[in-house]
Length: 394
Image 1 (cartoon, rainbow, N blue to C red):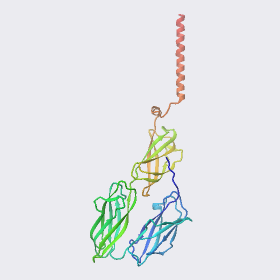
Image 2 (cartoon, one colour):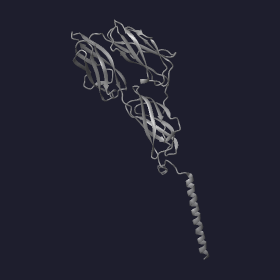
Image 3 (cartoon, rainbow, N blue to C red):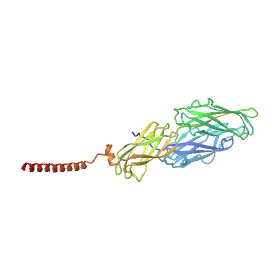
């Protein structure tokens, strides 16, 4: 059953980076945003506006940038990058400070991106211990499987920092520590040096695939005994690689030289949902696609199937013909994926097709057989009566 899907542009904004990170009060920071169109339709000209508030102000350039038109599916490496330079006020407070961005397409209304929590990190120049190089192994946490979270602590101060404690707040996310500890301690880190902290984690088996925001608390002391604390948020990605199975569920084509409908079925037997799927039956020297060769499937949830019919003419092949299928879709975390499949279509000889009931013998063949039997019968009958009459005369 094919579901109905809406079409149109879908503009998404992501804060890529700030430079420097962190930035000190009174300095200039450049913030870079990625603008993507993950929808199914192109856009008119897109305007992007930065709306800085204290402790930020626009340092140079214009607050509104025209990024031009964007085609459907213009994401990832093809996305548009917009940069703004901001001045940080001398009285800025240490911590994560939110900035607002809004976007509009041509004469449409402005769409404000306030729920994305675009944060610029401000640090005072003394005793800075920064969190860097945050990543997980594997890159995305698979539900029910162990993973490691690596966080690098970088001492940017001019002296030793001691009694460092780093803790994760996992109360509101489907992630738990496997070693019964969501807090790690480091005795000390010398000036200019780094230290890696490792957390052993597992995502719950029924965790939904998406990016989860995890609050992180960091406390430490300088050589004078002053206590420093900071709170930040990191994103942990939960998901799995989609597992799709393609097969021929129905066919009207059993031998070369035939044309008819072939039904290709997609089964999602993995733990990850897929969305925005497009299926293309690619050309081949062994067959011709008579119908449209490209169709939009949409979403295929886990433990679900979707089917699509194609009309084909098979010109070559003995036992099987591989139908070349290309799938383009996005995973639950919006990653674009392209996969190619070879789906075997079983072919039969005329004798095999009749044997398995796939092909009936032509009626004209039976007619010829009946005519031959009639002629033979008439000949034998005529011969029998001539012989009988001859015997009676004798």
